[in-house]
Image (cartoon, rainbow over all chains, first blue to last red; front, top):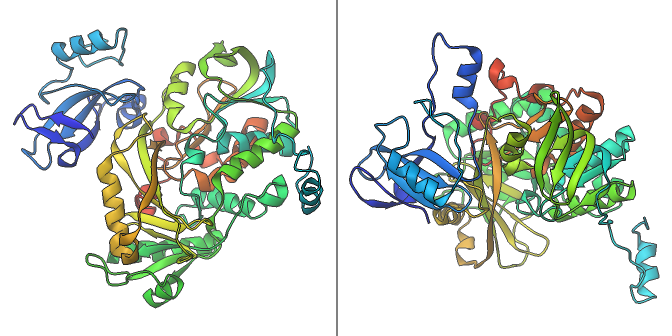
Length: 113
Length: 414
């Protein structure tokens, strides 16, 4: 059973209390962008076998969106963090690096890998 | 290959069954093949079979990291139907359904195809309209389906509760020629036929890399050493993103867990397949008497072949309100598989940015029913570079906005 701690209300919520919102930290593209950029933004997903950043909503709780870092191969949760960021917090990134040396992700919004 | 027949059974009965041979060989990989198929599930084996049967290409290896048919081919609820709304879907699923009808004869292997009929229940006004629309579309497509009344539903499924606590049964979309088949036998039958044509099925051999030169595939690296090939077909369902990354391109796809379960065996009580998409559960009875039950996918990315407990509860709850008698059944087994879901819930059968590298994935929760049609079309695409059945399922359709949107038409149980 998947249990995530809501970073806003601090509740350790079990998955029936949560709604999954798909991959996080997508770079948004809209008017003025190229077809390829728009296509990638809408449809392309990392779908990694390993570290995954994703959006969740504490639907049957405080109702707020937040982020989680999770491993899709073991279902290990590395941690949850605020939605007010376009890149995973350094703390989360360090935690993941300690447990999964050499992990990668596509470029984050700040240009760092 | 010794053919299976009533005479073979009689012959073996007289000599203590010592004459049965292995259904397929398990050779070590050769250095080079014309075609390498990655993934020995139903779709991969069917592709190899039709490459050999329809196009005479038999220098083929089928590489499998686990065991043959051990992924989603052995994990589904064995439902076969072709009552899809969109023309390209109806075409390929109907092709598959019609190939299932003669599969046991074609393969000389009993796949126990049972065209017992499939009902999709309409339990809301929207579903009535949706299914009537599908029935009209199917008529145009040459797929035999019809809209039936609640009374007819009750006649076909005496154990159903038409006046459920949440949603009444308002009618149904009935495909008389749909049904079920023995899922393992489909993989085993294709494997036996492929092996007989001289193809190599290499199990417990994981692909670790895809080698390319100047934008063309030249081979794969595996745990049993490198294998050169002229063409490669990636047919690995939930792991397609992993494999495509090795080849250097991405897919518009996410992998999630889908679960199923079976009950203890009981006497025959339901001789059709029933899908209840509003409350979300579907059920059929196997020849052993077990009720085979399927539900919905989890909402989050997952590669573990384990699903969420609460989905099991939801599925069982849906079935208890639709078929009150199942409330007294014990469940025997429950399992999960990793399905590959695309943006429009339709598959990708396509060339890729890498030359001579073909991909067949994205069947999501509807893979089993399409195995022969998918194999037929994929083989044609790989052999000739073009197949009328796959044209609309190109990887480029997302860029072009030419979706084959079955998420609305098929609801969730797809």
